[in-house]
Image (cartoon, rainbow, N blue to C red; front, side, top):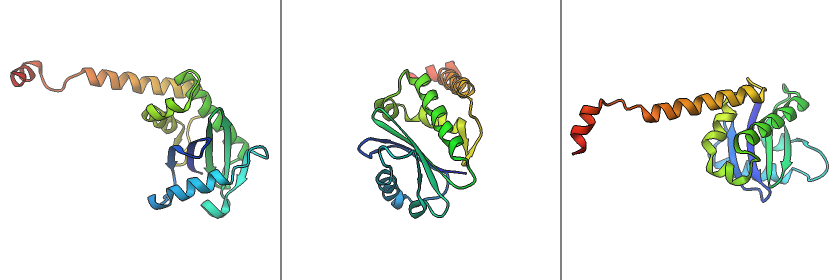
Length: 163
């Protein structure tokens, strides 16, 4: 099971935090600090984080440009499968934002959460195809745009109150 997904800057500032197992809000900063400190730059993309998330917890991270993409998971998940999931997440973000950067994540956090929700539901991986995720995200965006242009109040009533 995926326990958490984090996107952090190279300075350790969290840009996305999503926990799939309950973590008290008071501990979030400590968890982020602990994860950032345990990630070596050149040794491995796989790190055991038993002390931070409990027994059997591991994290996989990928460092791209100015961002770290971190997935924390338990022993029921395969390390290489989670690394591939990180790659799918990054590829989908690149398709969505045309070469994703830190500002894209900061200013489009809703789209980021939508992409993540299409991939992982309740800690379980539900989709690993970048094309299918993009189709779903585009459909959601189309429906949101359509719902913004559709008024639930008939025009004659809304005109009466606008005077």
